[in-house]
Image 1 (cartoon, protein in one colour):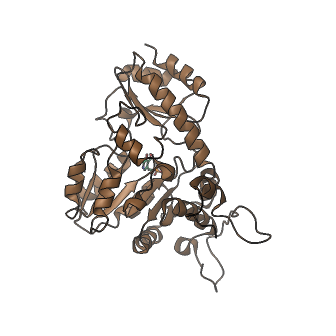
Image 2 (cartoon, rainbow, N blue to C red):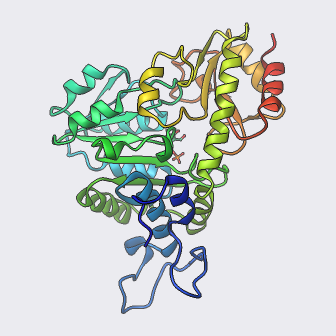
Image 3 (spheres, rainbow, N blue to C red):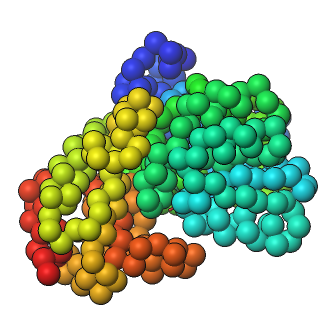
Length: 368
Ligand SMILES: Cc1ncc(COP(=O)(O)O)c(C=O)c1O
């Protein structure tokens, strides 16, 4: 077995999770069986997993430093983690976050399953004051879509020995840029649909827990609720994660260049990218992250200018989602649950195309 402690993350991504031994294939084959013959540890894949899931989980577990469980989607992973909250417990979550989380939390709150409270990501004192009273602190940094930066390190370290569970949605940062379990977070969750898969061709989620107790509880939710990943999806996610490091670094370089140009463009009212020195969370992001990611959000003057830009892009895809090799753009206030956002806000997931091609497309699309 390779040791993640002795290898750089880039090497681990490529070499982990492969079958070992002479004559074995280099890649874990697609095993499409739900059922296995009696007499060994694995009987039924919903209960005991499948070889492909284990390979994928081993790769992500080694990167984050914990025990991983894969799911049918990011939302399925999030639901299993929220299941850790005892009935009536309080969940504190960021006022800017993935809207699917907000929808799930308000549904459970309206059913009396838990109570919820929102805090701005930047309100570190508010987060610290919630340790002990809350059942769970849910962090998302950089946040979707405003790219706010919360002090993940400080909050996780402060809560490390408390009864309050700290969860970090690490989808935007990826395990290459941020490893919250090292700081004391209890669980990290990813939509593997995004950067980990990297090609917009699958839905998948994954959790990584620092303790075996939480990993077992999360796995038990997966078994009972049946939110298991597809065999093909995990095969593709494993193939995708092999190139995460090169994809992410290329996309990040593009994102920084585009953010600098957008910030100087007269049609742009605001540019949010944590890699810009002008971003209010820049210094914290520089301390806390190993890279600034490839998500940018920026504001045109109003909704109609932003819609117009989405209609005019030719190379950049006018589409939702993020983290693929291709650049995508969308006006986020059109998303249900995101109507409160600035009407002219465009969220762009920057891909790995040549940056001058991206800029030429963006420039003609945002021209008044
Ligand atoms: C930050 C974040 N977390 C979770 C999710 C949910 O993931 P999925 O769509 O794979 O269920 C998304 C999806 O956009 C996301 O952006």
